[in-house]
Image 1: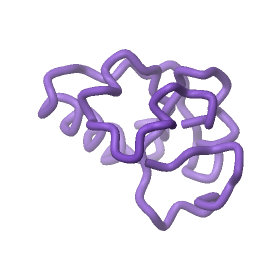
Image 2: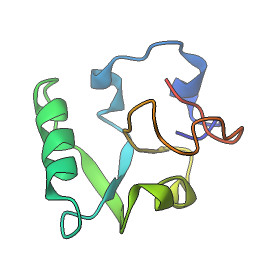
Image 3: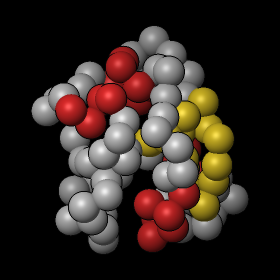
Image 4: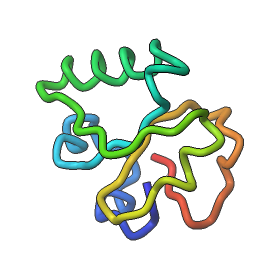
Length: 89
């Protein structure tokens, strides 16, 4: 998420707190397992993710965080892990 997202101030937000966020994801055309994983994760916390944009690959995810409410889920090996405009929680 961008550092302007209110959840960025929390050290460890719960997945359930993302229910009102807009998700950016890798297109199911390129990586179907990614969307499935995100949907399963959100379902286990009682909500369905609201995808607003899809990218062709993980590298494009950060460039598609356009609004305060946008989020994407990645692992700690994400290439732009140290990007100062993004808050990883």
